[in-house]
Length: 143
Image 1 (cartoon, rainbow, N blue to C red):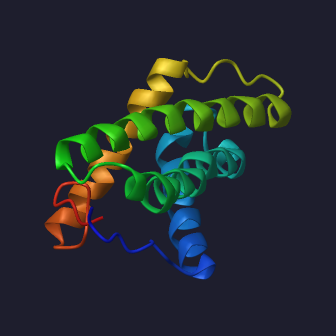
Image 2: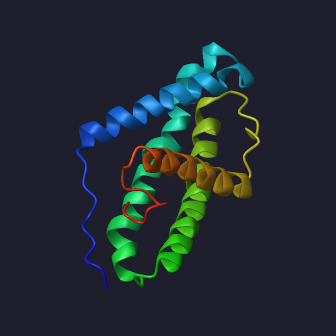
Image 3: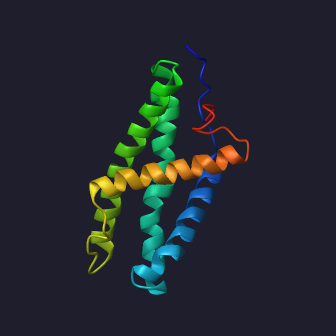
């Protein structure tokens, strides 16, 4: 088995990155979900996939990956399955938070399948950007 190094990052760096992502993402979707007046609440909702998603990946990297066979296909499939399941859980968090904070939350168009597939897509895009920059990622098997 490979000797996997645990993933470590300071909470300050994690918070700066994920809060920035949540603020930006909320600004992008605000026109379709009530306009700029909903931007603060949408930012909070976006923290679920941004900040929560970070911890889904850390759980895979530090807990599950060391226990799996070294085969890249097995590792890749397991990671996508974890992302899908994590997306469902994070989508539930978004839905419950929206219900608590918004007078008329609607469904936000978020089903469990959309949440899972959407989170996988976001992670693949993020890891694609890391890969293009030469950083450890899903695509090179180093991250």
